[in-house]
Structures are given as C-alpha cells and as structure tokens.
Image (cartoon, rainbow, N blue to C red; front, side, top):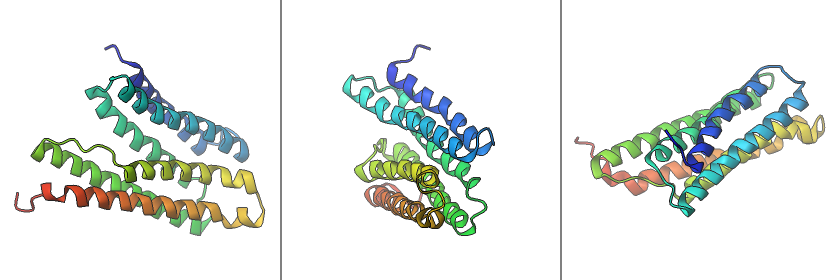
Length: 197
C-alpha cells in the first residue's frame, strides 16, 4: 500500500511512541539525560501530530486510513507518555497520586468521546471532527508532558523543583481542558444518543 506524506507522518508518530516510553521507563540514561532525550523524541512525535493534519487539509490528502490512524496515534502518544511518567514520580506520593488521577481523567475522556463518535457515526452518519476545545486539550496535554519531564531538569533541587509547582499547575490545566472538551462534545451531540435504543 502506497501512503501519502500525512499518513507517513502519522505512522512515524506511532513508531516513535515506544522509543520515548522506553527511554523514560528503562534506566538507559541517568535521570537528567533521560528527561532531555525523552523530551526531544516526544517533541518530534508531537510535531508529526501538527504536520500531518495541516498537510492533509492543505493539499487535499485526507484519507480513510488517515482518519482512522491519526486519532489512534494521538491517544497512544499522550497516554503512553502519562503512563510512562508514572514510573518517574513513584517516590513522590502526592505527585504520583495526582498523576494517577490526571491519567485516569484522560483515559475516561478518550474512551467516552471515542464511544460517542462511534454512536453518532452509526446513528446519524456524522463524523465528529475536532473542535477548538479538543485542540486546546491536546496542546494542554502535550505541554503537561513536557513540564513533567523538564521541571526537574530546569529547577533541580530548588524550592520550586522540590514542590513541583509547574507540574501541579500543568496537570490541573490539562485535566480541566480534558473534562471541558469532553463535556462540550457530549453537549453538542447528546441529541444523537437515544437512551431508548
């Protein structure tokens, strides 16, 4: 099967995901190096997320394969990062528990909205495209991953680094946008969900 450039970028995103997970989870490097290397790989992965959609829409290269793989790759990219990051904060009880709840919120939202998309597609033959809160949510999630990775590198053992202030703020903002975007999706498409069926 010959793939166009956007689909190649999406596939590249899927291929890169295990690499930054491996760098985070396995002690290949010392902590600071691990965080920098993982951030670079995650940055490249995130860039493909931006580029594939832009190129596909600009040059009319939208395909059914891309429509299927792109959202799957997006979810794997974010969830893979959050699950891997849990291993880096397991010694900090408060941060670990906060990240567990943040990860749970992301998983719950993604399962709910994906299920909604399937039902609406089946009942009304409508494709739910990404709205602006969904796009802001994705950006907030990507920023949160970078903050969790790089705050210890930037602040080390300073007061801010020890308290993980930026990590808590970014998780809070990310969780808020994740919930808000999910609520908006359900508000807009609730009419297609018939409890009697």
